[in-house]
Length: 437
Image (cartoon, rainbow, N blue to C red; front, side, top):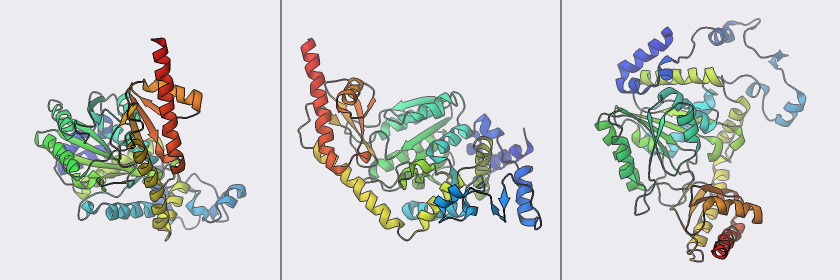
């Protein structure tokens, strides 16, 4: 094992042996190089006042070399903020700005110990880093039965972890905290569980309320008190899009510092929060523990980044930072929020009208981009393809009964027509089935 990896492992084991035990084999082996091209380039940046022939970019007239055809479309930005490599951990100003934003939007983080966000290539990359550092073959990754399918690829296929499911909703249509607790406690023999909490939930658009949130925290704490090391991942992709009286904070704040056996990891980003999907700017943040422990985890994270993407897009980071620093940012974001809320409320009004009760129920939703219908009479995949082929309407089929509808991309004026057409599609299929019989 590389001496730098050993040194980081010794720090983690000294500061919190439970966190050290959570690491995968790759997580224990990885490190961020302190010597070589990066360190020598950093040294030269400070000392090479005459010629700096270290880093692999091209300069011209003292500025990063660039093509006019590109720079002409980006003239509001200095070449230095676009063309050079960003640091592997991300642009320092952006990291600081995002950390301040986290504290402002999550008051429960005040006076808590947590690291500075590290820039990732959006949310999936942050989850992938988490999987690399903490998931080994056979480790349990606990997610609800209604989940984003990429978890299976990220944790299951790539890392060989075992996906453990529990029902998202209980009999009352609320978050199933008892099911989560049971799934965690069931890992006692393994001594470790990776729990992914995704709110607002994809695909259902559900965020728990305050009492449910407390029950979730209690479930994780129960697992820790039972001797289980819990990697608690908050996938906050749709953070901030809370339209009703749900939790309006990430559970990351509540989990940070809760128990030595709980390691909170917040994965979030500008991707959906700031409506910049193609920019691919995300963040991974570690919660709790000493400064030395957080630093060691961040060094291992940089090792993963260096070994995979090397660093993330510098222009995208510059654009997001510019937005966060703009005096118009808050007002513009609020305007988009109101549009999204209006669409969600219109969907709920349509579904609560009773016109379609014979065709479907719907799962509780109060946030995010999506909602899910629970079909009563037809197969979801059959309906999906029928809607696509006959009416030119795209939806997502999940299992036999569930149909996901992304109201985020439907104008409020078109929502009535959308659901009326989905209903007509159901009736078409019922007629075919009836005729066959």
